[in-house]
Image (cartoon, rainbow, N blue to C red; front, side):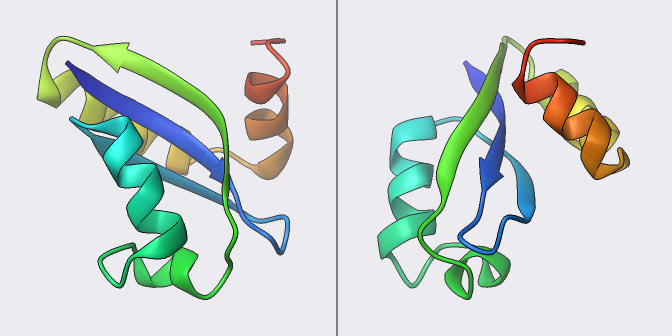
Length: 82
């Protein structure tokens, strides 16, 4: 399985990513030097939403879609309003 995920950073910004191992990737974002540079500077991060996909291409497409959204729409997604 593949996952698209939305993190909330310590500075209240959002980070959207994609992985095939969500638990490992979250640990990397919070603890490892292998986390994304963006999140390394904004730790700790909290998982606010994840979506599961069978095909990597679909997960990447969803990641790209969400990254293009304004903050308000991401908040609505987190709250389950869209």
